Length: 63
Image 1 (cartoon, helix red, strand yellow):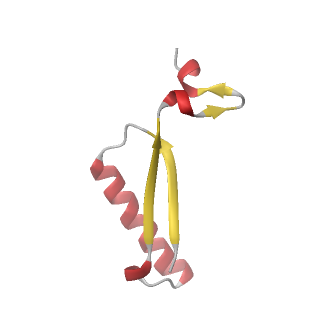
Image 2 (cartoon, helix red, strand yellow):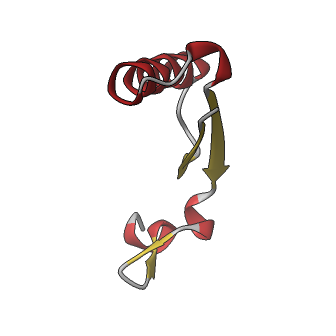
């Protein structure tokens, strides 16, 4: 029973997350042989002030 956690910045639409969940589930089934019914996908969304890349907050990079 695969559990896939996707971490991303806030701002994606429900439709985008819906499509991503289907794509991830399809890939798990096709590549790993995982059963669709047991594949779980969660989305953890973060504000730009809660995410850093190369030691710099994304919020500061966008300023």
